[in-house]
Length: 289
Ligand code: 8Y7
Image (cartoon, rainbow, N blue to C red; front, side, top):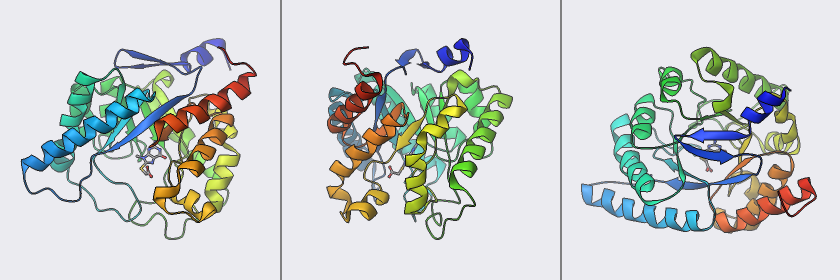
């Protein structure tokens, strides 16, 4: 790998905020997917809640806040663009105004990407890897970094019976092809983050292979994002329900950073920051940069 390529992969320019990826970072999860809305008042209650959660996450050291208005959990219902815009954009605006943090938008819809970046979002996180119609060209025009994630199938059915000939080879090949699609559309490599998509159309064994071999993704030459926080894999390993997966999540974050992840998507920021620091210091064999 050339020095230049390596250098460009080390700093992300997120709408003017620079993120130095020579050290690992934590991305805080902020879901804005209330079960039901009957009036605008509930949007306001949701906004207040979101800001309180974000304040805690920023205070604990999150570099990114990932705002999601469409649940991508297995079996979740689809959300219209109008609904997603109404959930996400006011939260993005408020976060950008209130906090010194990169606001990331977890969406596959070009309209939501455009409005969110207009409101100040600095990163696009797309679990569908910019494959929806218009997403690639929207992202190219928006000039913020993008995270392209692997998923087998669709959220509604992806966990039914995921199958791979070789999960590692297939996920790598998919990400390689999406990187090429991005570059063809005008998204430079300095703007691309890759993610194997833990839990998205993968059995426990598939997820474990990907975690164990996460360092293989470094051959793509781009920053790696990993999201394992509270996921069912950790429930399957430990037998614990989602509310009791903090310790397992921290262990998984440690392993992911040790295998080369540079951004960890997580719910529990303080604990995850400590894990990331332990893994990073161990890789560097020093306490200091
Ligand atoms: C991931 C994600 C979710 C992930 C990226 C959950 C939106 C499911 N997981 N985005 N989103 N990577 N990039 O349990 O692993 O948080 S939603």
